[in-house]
Amino acid sequence: MPLIRMLRPIQWSKNVFVFAPLVFSRHLFDLVYLERAVAAFAAFSLVSSVVYIVNDIADRSSDRLHPLKRMRPIASGEVSIGQAIAVAVMLLAIAGAGAHWLGLKVVFIVSLYLLLNLGYSLGLKQVILVDVFIVASGFMLRVLAGAFAIGVLVSPWLVLCTLFVSVFLAVSKRRAEILLNIEQETDHARPVLRHYDIQFIEQMMTVTAAGMAISYALYTVAERTVEVFGTENLIFTTVFVLFGIFRYLYLMRARKTDDNPTHLLMSDVPTLLNMAAWLLACVAIIYSRELRTILGWS
Image (cartoon, rainbow, N blue to C red):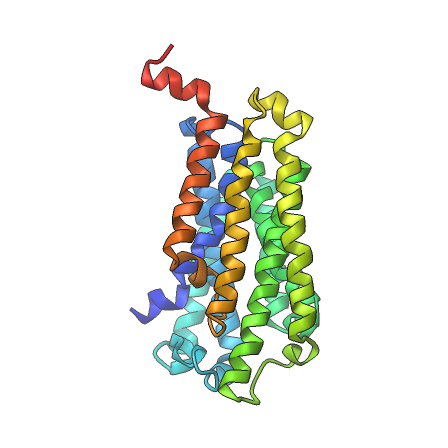
């Protein structure tokens, strides 16, 4: 349905970042904590859909000239502006109620996320580098919201790793957009893309990819991490992170015209298997004692 497509539910996969504090605080099997993390995920999903609606309303004219975005419900005329606004208001009310149930800190984080992204949709996305860092901040805010929702502290290394991941994905999206415009030979690209070039973007991707790998590796061997988990074995999960980075870089070069990182990741079977293997390895290492108890092993 057009209304469902307008919400872009596939993009809700980005909100799994709110579960990072749940997993790495060793509360994954605690139903009370899990319930609150799911509520934070739902609140962010609804607010992100509100942001997409506002963005699509603001960009409807330029989207009609884009080879892919012209099929979006608002740009194509399948959903009217009035309908879109009504849905956005309803979603915002539900998300606000959910965030309020989780506490004022979560309300603040969700509100900050909304304000930053509204600013992005209404003009900041045309400012070089600011556009990338606003997108990146969204992922960090998701992690913080997940931590505030369950009342735990987040490792600075985990926050830093999230920053590098999010900047890496945002920059790679710009790269794909530039290549798509070159292939389509269009003059209707968003103005900010004129300030970027492939060489500059690939330099930023190299820096952020290296930062991502190093910060994650340092997190796994940090004194606090080893103390909390009681093991140094988390370092072995770094191999999945490295494979994921290299696989994504390969996909970026092999599928030059896909300007949606989420679609690129969620449609690649090796990437999905690698993500599942990383998650299972993390759970097995972090929750080894709990799993032995559940399975009845001594």
